[in-house]
Length: 261
Image (tube, rainbow, N blue to C red):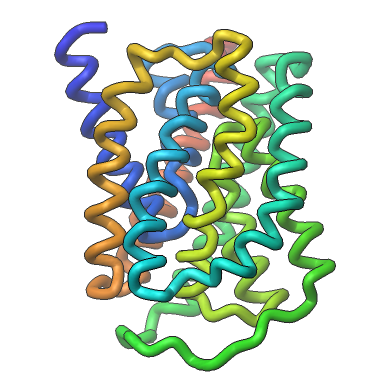
């Protein structure tokens, strides 16, 4: 690993960590395809490294959100039971899934992520910065636990935090304010990723020379993103996130069609 590559990984981690902290998605949705496309890591190694980076995102952001009493710790711990089971099972299965099939599934996930974020961006286009959290009471736990199980499976299989699934689910199905859902998702994704990362590491799919500089950048970016989140309108972050995910999906489709992946 050259110095230039390490510096690029730090920059990538910083950007992905900031996005993850602001949008509550962990950053893995950016890290995995970039490592596979531009750093030429095998898809399983890209997923393993991404999971380690997601743990760093959760660690940095959770400390800030919990301190501000934005995270619903009780809700996160309940949903995490289901999410962790899904992540562990999927991580074991991933070793037996064709690499090209995982790449195609990731493209579908990227496009789903973009469409999900488009809806959030449209709904928040006229929003004002709100510092107070309205009173709420989470409901519809069966739906939340079911979606959390699926989000965990996607985390273990694709190396993402699953926040792009969990945040809308908590917001739309369980009546949790968007800001709380984002903070709670960031609180959960570390445990989710750890359950899968342990299995990937045991298989030798966590490239430490890549993970180390990436985690350094992710931790810094996540901490910065969590600190400035209350001061930034989500429409700006979400719009940029949409552009990045669509671009990466397009690049992966091109690579798949030409047989480069």
